[in-house]
Image 1 (cartoon, one colour):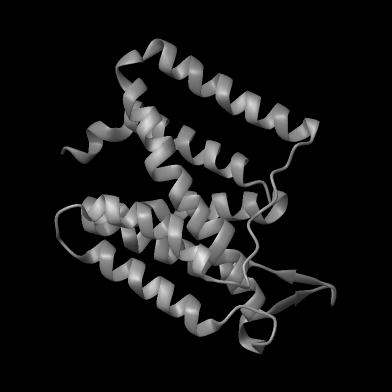
Image 2 (cartoon, one colour; image 1 turned 90 degrees about the horizontal axis):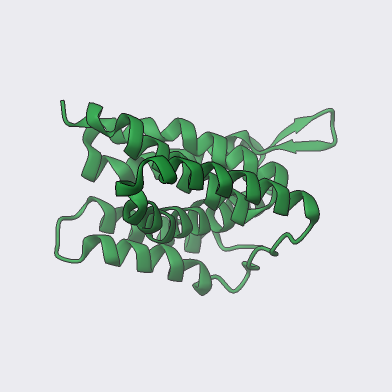
Length: 190
């Protein structure tokens, strides 16, 4: 079982770093999101799903992203950066680590555990907690608009809960960021 104190500590460290203004803040956040889960000895890294269905899903997302970039080549560097420095560390921390460990801690806390048909546990609250923190971390750089990432985060959490496929969620996150850069980033300049 994961230590609730370690989860709180890791979340607090990440939050303090996210809301602070200092040089190399982004680099520090990326490092923390990648490193903090490794401190939890009770956390097991997610398995890489190497089934044909996963390859098909990854391929569809990669082809879609490639097609978008083919017609919008000036976003290629941004796409690579968002995949490596946003989607990967954020999904590694929030989905693979935080949601998984919150779920383990949940099992003994009655008000965080919901039962459906007396057999399945709902991950709704776990996903909501992780997505709330995810959105909160975006407000420092994006203002109140950063709270809008709560909704895609709920979707990523749902996909991860259903598939346990971290690569799929990273690719979905990267693709949605590419779509945002190409079609919606102008709205933030208003």
